[in-house]
Image (cartoon, rainbow, N blue to C red; front, side, top):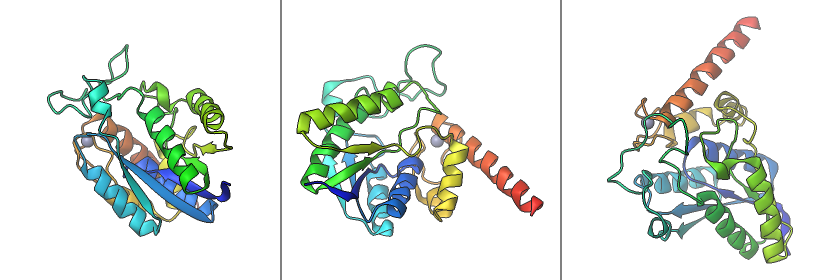
Length: 226
Ligand code: ZN
């Protein structure tokens, strides 16, 4: 029997999933985390996921998803011979797209959630900063939720607290949750594997920094008004 007060967070050690971890902590009585090692170039993110889970005081399960690179080639996140796209190509998803990644992650998370009796699954996907990843879209998540429930005869609820938020609003959420500095200084979003403010020039860093600067400006303006 699934526990309606228990949530399992898919945690990568990045800004979005770490913010979701603390969102879940505020919302559910029990929180657990799951992280995946899938041949990513920057396996350091797995260590950061463990660190974030320890800080949040939640148990974390690390799962080997090393089969993913065996299924497909040509993705810069797992193939160190390929340079990551500096800019998003006009057509086609960027080469940082790992086909089916969220499909696999959420399906595996659901199997583990059933094992630990967690009714809720939490993922940091967002379609607002949609960068060509089809498995970050709301329609996909809803469809998968139905499929998982049918496939396992359970009543999982997938939560996507960031789905309609841009990066500025995600920083605001981290601040409201009291983890702004932690997220800013310790999480890893950079495609070049540099935690915190990152390398500054990859697409992930540009997006993150733009949101951060906008949020800090807004916060300053608010302070000035009070
Ligand atoms: Zn970077």
